[in-house]
Length: 219
Image (tube, rainbow, N blue to C red; front, side, top):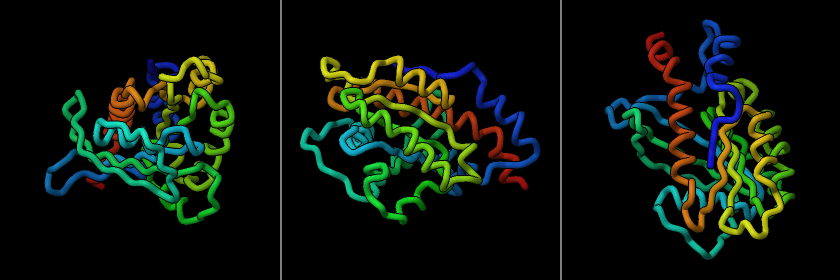
């Protein structure tokens, strides 16, 4: 289950209040060859073991690798998708592995010019939920110029293991409301909600930035 947490039109309202005649520096680029309408970059962060790599694998290949492989550094995935509104998106997902577990300054460059931020946690691990704010604060500290224009989604993963749930649904939903973010609970094992969440998030991002694209590239 997923929803846009916050009143309908929050993103547009934020734009009216703060953008005026300025344009965000992270406006998505379009394809010079016409292969796609927008190129969208999403950064995925969360603690080790939350299923970030599996989220990417599930979306990229529609399959799930049951053998968990710990990711060090950055994983990158790119895929062309078509949204329901007909927009063709070159989707790039960057997996910033391990949240703050690896003191590797180079990983922060991948935060630059992100259009979307996914904060992922494991519903069976309360600690993974509690560090989300720390991960978000870190993201903002490295994106002072573009962070306000980055849309957000919270994903609570592993709902196939609901019997071991430590994070109630309402906690994730309340946190998403506080951030003005989309919220979904997913299962990478069964695929439940994974593609729907990613497609919905990309639709929000493309709708949000479409108001700037023509004006920005005509400047």
